[in-house]
Amino acid sequence: MSHVQPTLLVRKVHPQAELPRRMSAEAAGMDLAACLPDGPVELAPGERRLIPTGVAVAIPSGHEGQVRPRSGLALRHGLSIVNAPGTIDADYRGELKVILVNLGAAPFVVAHGERIAQLVVAPVVFPAVVEVQDLPAAARGDGGFGSTGV
Ligand SMILES: O=c1ccn([C@H]2C[C@H](O)[C@@H](COP(=O)(O)OP(=O)(O)OP(=O)(O)O)O2)c(=O)[nH]1
Ligand SMILES: [Mg+2]
Image (cartoon, helix red, strand yellow):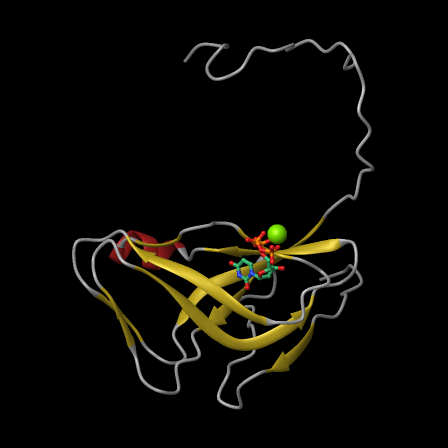
């Protein structure tokens, strides 16, 4: 990679936690592993569970973390994330957790160390909120929700 690489500071909340890991040089997401030292967790079809990762991070200021599903688990098992993409604030120092949901037809067992999600770090802006009586005119106006046809 030719650009300057910023740093993601990571603290293990649990000694058996896995660090977020980029699986290819330019992977957008760093995989997050489940931290389940007390044993695997089973999700029944339709069930959701808060799965700990055992790590806390300091997202670089001016950025957010997005916790996204992994496509392989989604395709093979119907596994998703209820609040996808989960939002990790740059000023959050608690343990990263993933709200997994089993949308598949079979029970899904989450094992310790299994990569269950991916963390994407993306820039955000912090606009001041200013109330106005009229918004600036724009081409689309209030057309939405299919207004351009199919
Ligand atoms: O999938 C997620 C989503 C959030 N968080 C953590 C980091 C985030 O900074 C914090 C708050 O998340 P969010 O703002 O989405 O939740 P909320 O329901 O608005 O809680 P709060 O009142 O704490 O902001 O919870 C996670 O660990 N995983
Ligand atoms: Mg919030």
